[in-house]
Amino acid sequence: MSFRAETTRTWKLSGPIILGELTQMALGIIDNMMVGAISYKHLAAAALVLSVMNIPFVLGIGITMSVSQLVSMAHGRRDGQQVSHYLYNGFWMCTVTALLIAIILHTGSDILFYLKQDPEVAALAKPYLIIMGWSTVPMLMFMAIKQFTDGLEYTRTAMILSLVALPMNIFLNWILIYGNLGMPRLELVGAGIGTLATRVIILIALALIVFRHRTFRRYIAVRRNQWALKWKTVKELLHIGIPSSLQAGMESGAFAVSGIIIGTLGALEQAAHQIALSCAAFTFMVSMGLAQGGSIRISNAWGRRNWADISLIGRSTLVSGLAYGIFCSLFFISARNYLPLAFNDDTTVVAIASVLMFYAAVFQISDATQAIGVGILRGIKDVKVPTIYVALAYWVIGIPVGCLMAFVFKMGAAGMWIGFVTGLTAVSILLNKRFFNRLRREKAAGNL
Image (tube, rainbow, N blue to C red; front, side, top):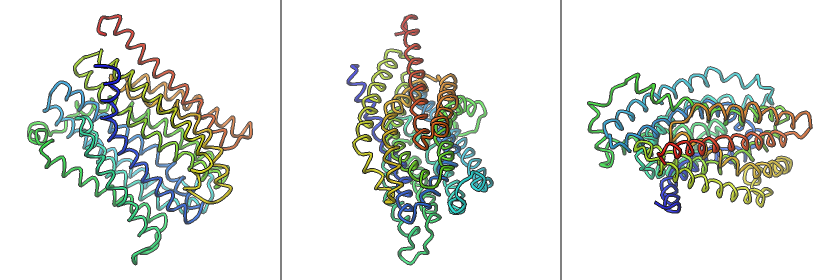
């Protein structure tokens, strides 16, 4: 198949994943916008909660990725029995992970008062953190089932549910945040309850579709033989899931820690940082969705041991990510003075955010290509060394450089973003070089 045809197939598979990811990200952005309309301190509180819970939440999302990878490999071997077995074990593995995350966030919620944040911001944030922590349970259960359908390359199902969730969440926020239709005005707590309710509803809907739709009937029909928890299978899932989780967690953790560090500069800087980060995270969902689509297709080819397809899919996905990163960079530069106004109308917050948007624009290319690098390597079950690369890039280079620029060179929040650029560029180069080195070895061995 040609380079162009492979690119089209990857985008076709990735499109619904991307739209679903963007919708999920939009839920958080809408929460920020709607609570930001109350005051900048409410926006700062929401930012603080997202910073604190982002690390454990993303660790959980990383665990779910193993489901799609192993389902896709089994699907490539045309082993429907094993596909069903991975679904069952993966679902319960993700459920236990979600419960642990929720319990940790609930019992550790007082940490908000020890992070040198504005006391009023911390007080507003605590109940929101507890509710959002418990909302990770239905979210990760939903993600486990979604990864199963994605691994079979049926990516539209979860996308449609995610689209339905968007107006549902907006409506619940409108009622609960502002106290409309006779409901009490709950403000930030209302945003948390709305998100929790939305996630429960889409979980139930997706579970019903998988159980009842004829597309998935063959995998449900063998449940008596395959739906049994096996430690060997769980270990196989964790072999991919834990490194994937650590990769995502260390990246998000770097952003979360930087958010907390920026919070020590003041609530205005933290609110501005959250605006720029929300915009950058939104565009990153496209890169991540494309990386997932490419990873699923490579996993399928890996199941067939077809290195020619692996090479073509990997190269075409990387080129697509590079082109997308360039587009986002240009868009952020041109719109940096206008996008912050959608979140907050405080002139100081908007002025700081517009500067940070420029730095967010600079790292768009590296952000996109490093996501692709992680995805294509995960597709060939190469996850351990990339995890080390991510750790070095963010925690040995990114955060230290950011702190140096922010506090020693007195650049404030902008200095932390320079650290992001440095870390993202380093990890992008290392990851993609590793993939192409693997291709060269396979070519030398006569497999390509």
